[in-house]
Length: 319
Image (cartoon, rainbow, N blue to C red; front, side, top):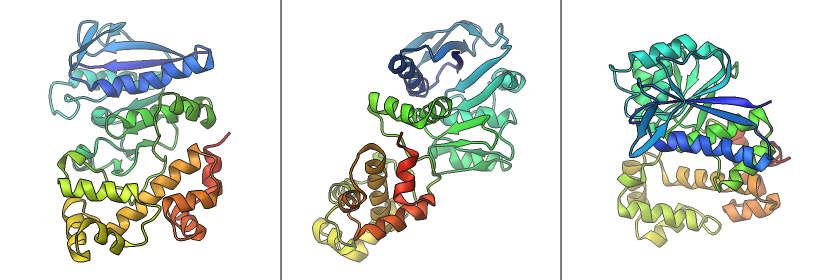
């Protein structure tokens, strides 16, 4: 039986917040050869059309005339309107009134503010675009706000939030995993050529806005990421980027608020995460490619973040 997904669309919404998850579910239909999902677009204005940037979307109905009876999933894409104090009372009232008609509700990016204002996230985990994390935490102290994760799920599997923009794709893939299984979700990810983020809350990750980094910092990060398999220690980075250990530490502290060693450690984890999930490389091969000193070092790194061994972690993402 098909699951209905309702997209609540607003003017000034972010188009990728809508199109990213939509593509995941459309691709699921295409790859399965079945109509796993049907879609309904609901406008938050009083006409059945919204503008997402320069893209106009014709909707099936609007919040002033459509009243859900029973549906599977409500997806609320984010936008510039979501964090504003005024002007969205009708949207918040509608979400508050009808959210219970859906089996689950998912916000993308800044749309977590809509759920927060509707009182749905009190005493629940949530995330949002990294730029607005502190604002969400300050305005809604009863919400357990996570900074470094792609998405959150409450303990009832009813409320979901994603981090900024493209992280809505991660959340959609996770919903697909819950509906079908992780193998099919990974197939869809490969089909759309998207690498999902780990579904853990990584306490060591930080959101990096590359547009704000100096050219020197970009060069250093690119050098590290391109040479993980041969990097021995921080001194080997210094030798190749022309900085002393003290200078390198100062640059990382100033621009990323972390140490060079922590960035290298996290980069190794990210690469090993990808290789474990999407390749058939042996554990030793993964360890070597990611630049760990030995297999035990990789085991410690992965267990530190996931609580699982590399084999157990890989099993989560394999048929």
